Amino acid sequence: MLVPHRGPLLGANRTWAVLTLAGCVTVVAALGLLFRGQASPDGFDRAADAPVVTFFAGHHGLLPWLALPGTVMPAVAVSAVIAACCLVTRRLTGAVLAVTAVPVAAGLDDALLKHLFHRTYLGQLAFPSGHTTAAAALTAMLAVLLLVPPQRPATRTARVALVALACAVTVTVATAVIGLRWHYLTDTVAGAAVGIAAVITLALLLDLVQGRRGALPRAPEAAAQEPGAVPREPEAVLREPEAVPREPGATP
Image 1 (spheres, rainbow, N blue to C red):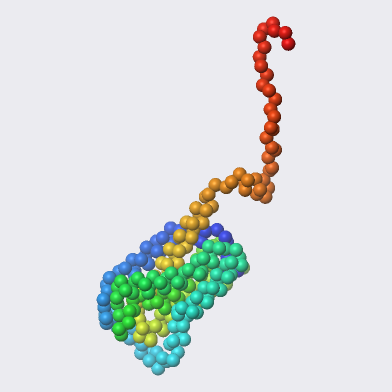
Image 2: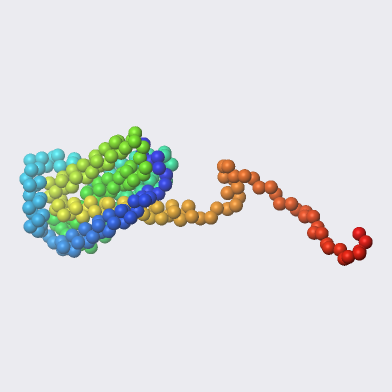
């Protein structure tokens, strides 16, 4: 059910993917520059986070479970299952996207962006939210694999439902890390943008590699062995000598 389509990951949606990627990069850069080096919430984050923190004040035992899908091991486990489904359906690019989406997005957070913008929450680097990044990367990866390819009417509802469930999980993870006072709301927004941007970038690169491989010229032997190819007759080794014109009046 995952991937009956074995063509490019993005296909005709490449233009929209590039525009979405540009929007995500703009959001991360704008928020990062706005909150760079900040060690306390601004007025917007304080107003947005306070109701969430107050609502979950008596449910601190529940919040870590709600944030669990955004941690490394569950995210990697889900990615492995999706990659296995892609391999079963013989979609190699989908499997590569599944196994790389979360590690690349999380690595971009931890190795670069958090240190670049150095925004802290209670002394810990907080921007962007790594939990939200992982959850959003899983959601974006599922959206690419399930919604972009041509859909059969029989599976369309299930595909949309799975992506909608993943979106709900991402929102839940973002809400939980705010309630736990690990991140501000703007940290989670940037985290979602990083996760989506990482998946789109990987999908574009995989489509580019696949397109270049498909454009390579095939050897004549390989083309001759394709199903339906008409076998060619071997060229004659000996050719008849060309006729030599005789002079007028010459004896044959």
